[in-house]
Length: 295
Ligand code: NAD
Image 1 (cartoon, rainbow, N blue to C red):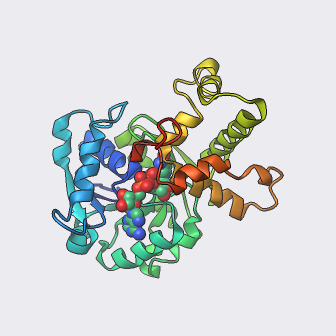
Image 2 (spheres, rainbow, N blue to C red):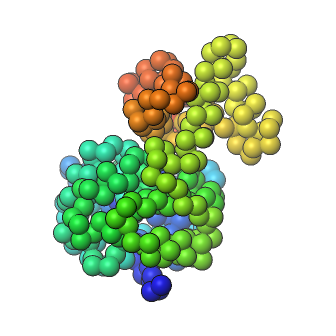
């Protein structure tokens, strides 16, 4: 297997995950160019800069020290796509929408360096369907790379191949993720929500279902699914706020749409009150209001 040297990473999307993945890489001394949409007025890298400033408010801390920020270069797709040519790894972490991801892949493809690996941090969209938005020349170096939130602290990364992915690509990524970032890597099949979210999101939905059935409070359910059973954090409603309620809805939608014969299919839906929060823009921690701080 040829050695995969990662000198510079592009992270596409400076949201909840993209900004924290960039910080995690910077902590490990890896230079990153962090892309997001161009802000329409003023500083065109404003979305990325705001996201980086927001990292300071997160608990637990995503950055090992303020100096690490210097390793993260802000960029936007309109002005800076050329910078992709200098990246050996491109990690896409934009919103969980197949149409938005595939449109972005078509846009970036001409700028990706030959030999670079392109990988999606999707929570559970079909990696093979995403691959088809890339030209055949890039498809064999494309796969899923699913970090968990918060990426600095969560050890697991799922990597997912398509029928086109060269086996060496997964070997190279696994070696890099374990040796450079200290991750525990599992190779998941390209099934809806892969392994961890298929189980984890279902357990969140089950807890939400029983909240209403048993007339429990959010705090009670968080305690019961968190510290009371030995998990360090509250694992249902606070987790939903940290993940982002819109992202959770997309991930639940992936199961609802793609697993029609699953015996638990009727539970693959969010409570109406949670959908109503999303509709009014209360998306959890990232919007400042969610389950716990209502608008
Ligand atoms: P987010 O909503 O916090 O951020 C999404 C980013 O996508 C934003 O910065 C936004 O500007 C950008 N964006 C929106 N529309 C776009 C478009 N049309 N083109 C380009 N960029 C666009 O989302 P997130 O929580 O960071 O999730 C990003 C990815 O990571 C998703 O695929 C999600 O499923 C996955 N993921 C999320 C979590 C989590 O806990 N939030 C965990 C693991 C994986």
